[in-house]
Image (cartoon, rainbow, N blue to C red; front, side, top):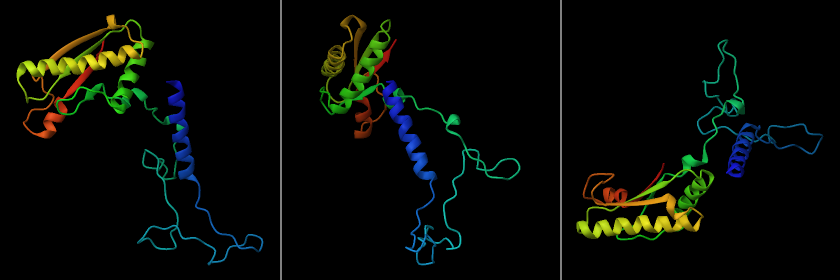
Length: 193
């Protein structure tokens, strides 16, 4: 986990460094003096050629109280928690209960969270869209929750720490009888307690 945060931090620093460097100018072969033919214009379309370059403003607007430009240090930046990138919901295709590579990565992330916090349990709530009989949808919601439970166990989480509940079509995330709503309702929610 710390390794991922370090890589993410390095990527931000590299991006900021690349954005803050001046544009490279061409140099003539005679000692570095530049002629008009050697200068590369870096203005945006519609900008006067005498105003070259890009102004980068800080988060507070780029000006101090006395009107001078100010920068922002990396110390003031908020670090993004990698956990924010993994929504605790796994979505499924119509009448499906298999995990793909993307959803397996989500399960793996939460399995690692569970392994790092051995006192916690996880509840897997299986859901379906409204199509199908109530009995069929309860069984499908259970199959979806069970496949997630099996993946968690493959990543080291003890079965005793996993609870499975199927709601079938009874608790839709989005109301409606259209593909957008159905897609949001075919899910397993991962609730760590």
